[in-house]
Image (tube, rainbow, N blue to C red):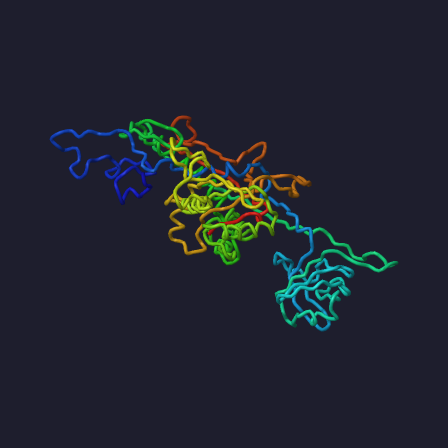
Length: 478
């Protein structure tokens, strides 16, 4: 049953008010006919299971917190690798610009005198020894092992596409040790919970009146009371919102009017970082990887694996995809069957002649990676992301997400120690006095009297946020 304004169409409204536009009628003739029509009392469930929640239950955990924000730190890379610019190839000087993840590393790079490095750029590669690397200076000097200067190795001035990697060190006999140590690099992230609210209200008179159609809701409620059906729908919709906020929400930036205090409640609404935004900011998107389109063949899928090889290389991953991508993956895997061109082969996938043919795949292994595929209703339903994807331009739609399985080790600043957590987990506000995980309370004079309002108001509230750890191991398929 669509959620529409009662003034626009006839049907049950979310706000239960008895009027001329929310009663059951038969076409335009109404009940004023010679013969009484046969009324089918059972409401038809034409959309199947309408809720989309369940994704976070499969891939995340929930944990209480009492603070107004959650802060966690993630380890940096173990080895030293930087993007560099050829300052003066004749003098063999190189400027350090960024680390390999495009984070600015100029004067705080970790390259030191005596380091053995490989310098690549312009199609050339040279092995060299670092001879000058002063602390607080972005420019280093190297001495190639096979050439007099970098220019002899084919490098040119101003080439800013270079990469330099430290792979060891060499010192002469009787020399002192290194005079400068490298400290581990880590990055700190933070997220804040948002308050999510909803409510349902029905008057005391309507709460006592029997409805006209037998209904069934997402929470299993059945009967003739419209207010029970509507309350159940409101609750189911609110539970979906709890998940959708953790997936879709974004933080406020300086350009938003919300940040300027334009909202009714001032400037204290900062938003929160959902899964999609975290992966777009700190993870990978298939649209940004050369050779990846819809993962419809192994060559395109191998480009995804190459991105994972460069970041963590988590062995087991879960694929949550829409219908089109699921079928494309099935076709890709089926095409690997050498008998596919001449007909489906029996037995390989237990597809015997006496059983229904299974043309779907639940998982596969490629290289050193295992992938487990699952349809995600949220990406298919026209009323959720399915409808948004139809209107989104290429690259902005979300066809699926790849999520690493298992746990990661991070430093929790509240606990003051390293802890293991699922890569995804939800934090909700709670204390010994108050739990805001999924709070419900009833006010009014219907049932237990709490006020003089001749109505029953069901209030829903939650305060939560998503923590996306190790986003460099995630990928959005778009």
